[in-house]
Every structure is written in structure tokens, then in C-alpha cells.
Image 1: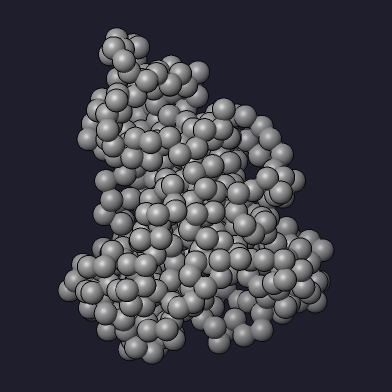
Image 2 (image 1 turned 180 degrees about the horizontal axis):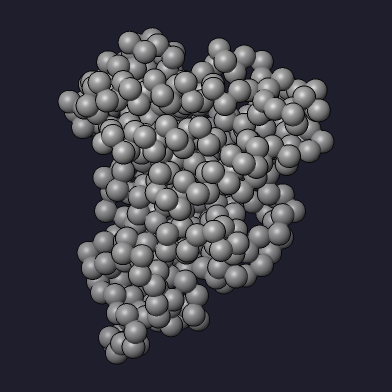
Length: 427
């Protein structure tokens, strides 16, 4: 069957083009894109009237923590995919921080089979960088890649041993793998629980210095230059990291960077009266750092925006701030929160969607993120101006630890399509 989207405001983040038009889907791919005049409709086609809303490629989220296997009470592949579909995310890259860790081909295969059976969006597993996420011995990149792993990372853990990291980058270069190392030195973090500065002192909380991030990033950039390999910094959060990334890119080092939507829209002051839903890793930074991250995104120094979706249950969040677990859910609010930057005239909509879809797809070597003939029919329809107040009880994630509870947001997804099939209809 042919599906035709009409009366759409098309946004192609690959070419940064936007305008009215229509789009044809046949099977699992985009058959045609018509800019301007509305086309003749083929007989028997299914017609979806967008009513002037935005039609764009689905989002690609490169950093999603899922509890399955081992912690299904926090999140399953099914619940995470339903949350993703409701938020306009059509591809998620799952982190290996599970029990057991995703460090063997059999576990990669298990995740992919479970995703095929239960998930409604594309699920791409990232495998562990080191065995057991222990940071001491590399995993077998070649076999894990053949099993379906799209990248290698220890998730929320940092590989602190430079020799292990160098070997990983050398091996990744030879097999064409992507290495993503969490930039946060655990020894410098110590017992810190929020950004180090005047505000942490006022709250009486131990701080985490920016150097916990920048020292690891600087080291990894130098090792990537030594190995001649690609490196992705999954989360950068401060102005000093932006300068390191800028210098690396100017020097021709194969570095790409991500930033979480939390660090683009929130700052350390949001911790307020010890609200644990705002306890993250890396921690929320000062307002000057947030502004620097936005400028880096506009300049292209920062390549992608991620949700950093990290579900935590009530028992790990309803604790004193210093004892609570890090993490916040974000799949369903990723687009709405990111649109705050558009409404504040900080970035154009096509450029924002490029960081949410096209660039992550390019980094991962995926064909998604384009409105073009032959591209996968992973599409979203949304109204960027529709206001709503978020009620965490309505979230599809099993965990409800969102920092945007009761926040006023704009931009609701009306429809999500994956491989030509509608997986979410918000009408």
C-alpha cells in the first residue's frame, strides 16, 4: 500500500530545507517527496492529512539506558520503545549497563531478538567496551560487531586506564568500530553529587569539578590522535570541554560530541531544594556552561543531542540527595524540551532536527535522518507550537523520574512511523 502525507510542513534536516509539500511512502521506504504543490493521489492510497504540522525524519537517540535484561522493573525494551515512539524517537541505541552486561555476542543477539519480538521502534545495541564493564580487559569488537553491536562503550562508566583505552581505539580503527567513552573520572568525582561551585557550597553538597570531565576528554582526544581512530564523546557539559572539542576538530582528529537535552535546557539551580530527579551524571552545570553548550550546538562543535534516558525506580530516587541514584528519563520529552531552543530563537528548526536525527545517523552509519527517495520511512508528524503541561503519571516509561514533571512544554508528536508502519498515533 502507498501512504501519502499531504498538507505537511516538510523539514529535511539533511539539506536544512523546509516548506510545504507532500511525501509518498511505499513499503518501508520513502517513494517520493513533493515540495510545493499538492500532488495527484494514486488510487487506493492511504492519505494522512498533516494539517500544516511538521513532517520530519524520526529522531535517533544515541544514549538510552534500558533495564532489560536484569532490571525489567525499571524499564523493558517494550516500554522504552513505546516511550520513544510517543516522543518521536524511531531509533534508540541501548547502553550495555545491564545484568549481565552486553559484553558477549550471545547477549547482543538476545537484546536484538527481544527487540524484534517486543519493541515498536528500531533498537540498536551498543556493546561493552571492556569485559564486565570493569575497565580492565577489552571485549571482542569484531565478534560483537558481527552480532549486531553498533558501538562500544561502558555506558555510565569511564575507562580510566589509558593503556586499555589506547588499545581499544587501535582495535576500533582496524575493524571500523565506534568507541564512546563516558568522560567522567571516578576518582575526581569521588563523593561529589553536583556541580562544584558556589551553589553546591550553599546547599552543603560535595561538588564535582569540571576537570573530572575535561581531563578524560583531553586524554581520549590525544589517544584518538595517536591511534588515528574515530572517537565519540557521548556527553560533554561545560565550556572547557567545548574548547577541547573545537581544537580537536580544527586539528582534524575524528572526534564527534554529544550533549544531553538536560544540559541544554537545565542548570545547577534547578536542583533547588535537593530535588533528586535533577541528579545526573555529568551533573547539571552553571548557566554559563549551558549557554556555551547551546552555542557549540549552533556552531556544530557539538554534533548530536541525546535524551540520556536513564530510568530509576522510586527506591533509588526517594532518598537524600547525596544517596540517590543518578539519572532521569527523557525519551518522551526529548523533542519538546529541545524545541525550547527553537522558541527562544537560539537555533532554527532544521538545524535542531539535524542534531537529533541526521548527525547521529551519520555517525552510526545509518540511512535514516533524511527526507529523500529511498530513505527509510521513519517519520514523525508534530506540532511544534502545541502547548501542554507534562504529567509524569502519563509517561509510558515504567520509571517516572523526569526532571520536567509539571513543566510547561510545547511540541507534541501526533504520529510516529517506523519502516512504513504507524507505531504511535496521538490523534
